[in-house]
Amino acid sequence: MTAPRAHPARTTSALAVPLLLAALVMGCSADPAVRASPPRKATTTPAPSAAPASIEKIASMTGCSAEMRTEAEELREAVCVTPEGNWIVTTFPTEKLKLTWLDTASMYGGTYLVGPRWAIGAKPQLLKTLRTKVGGELQELRGMN
Image (cartoon, rainbow, N blue to C red; front, top):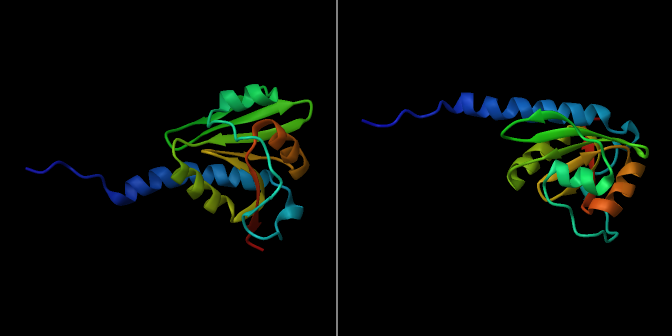
């Protein structure tokens, strides 16, 4: 007797829905002026070593008051609020899930600060400020224009 196998369509859709929803949220909040830029163009300016993949650690490093929005196997997401501005930080249990999320987010465009197993979405100027605190690379994603 063989063990029951998961139905591939159910497994895929269970993962795709939260990732697509997160990408939609991030894409809708991105700066529309950046959408015509080239895909995933990382900046060359050196930054400090990137923060670990923890919303709590990133919040502590930036003085953020993080409000959790999503707690799922595929990702965790919080809204950060500071006097400098607001942003969304998303963390992932694996680098592969982060890359899948970024590929999906590229449909909507925007600029993101990306580190190992995390991404932050905000206005580009705020991302530059955050980069000095948490490291990572600025990536511009091209939307579907």
